[in-house]
Length: 81
Image (cartoon, rainbow, N blue to C red):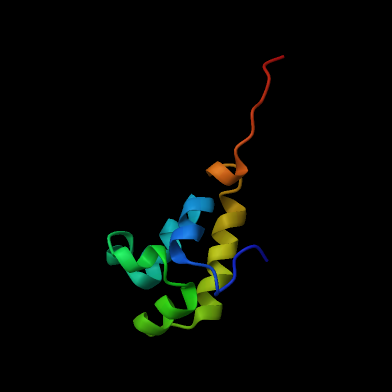
């Protein structure tokens, strides 16, 4: 598992852009404009929004796997052959 509930929301969004849809589903659009989201961990966000942190983390990891190769952490350079 790549993503844990101890990771900050901002860190996850930066490393795994495909997780945005999961944050939107559980935390709403306010998550993207909230200054605290950059520092708050997923567990805290889940508590504040009344959702199960383990469920959110499971879906975040699924989204990160599906989106592999889309974000900066997964970026690679390919040579044309």
